[in-house]
Image (cartoon, rainbow, N blue to C red; front, side, top):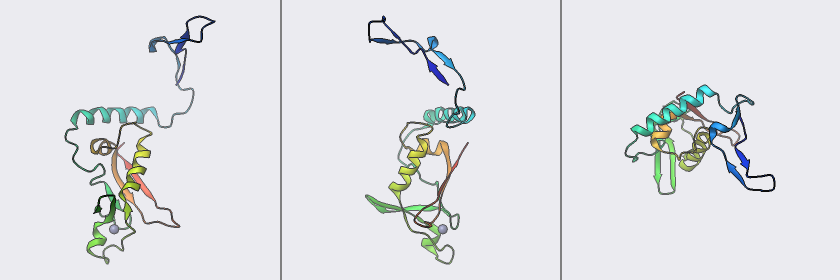
Length: 156
Ligand SMILES: [Zn+2]
């Protein structure tokens, strides 16, 4: 929507402006195409409200249980410690015959990516409740020509 008339100058000489209440703004709906549809935006806001009411105890890792291997469809788990934590395919860790595996994915790389995608919907920080409210699965594929494909499957 296009919003105008949000502030008013005190008088024509003054540079000072006062903020007007929202119901006095001039709002012209649908002047440009949104980044996401209104329907999606509304669905996300509803989910967020429901989840933030339900969210208690943030002890789990934000992306826990969501990351899957694009080679075999199996779960990817966190390995390593401290700043050197990586996702690796659970199947490949047990048997290379079941999954050829793929290079480990640094945890911070994936978190940064997810955070940047979520910015479209909310400025809230990456938490377990938020991520699980919005994301169903994250599918990680091995790099091809130095580019890794990471597919986020949204819940909405
Ligand atoms: Zn795998």
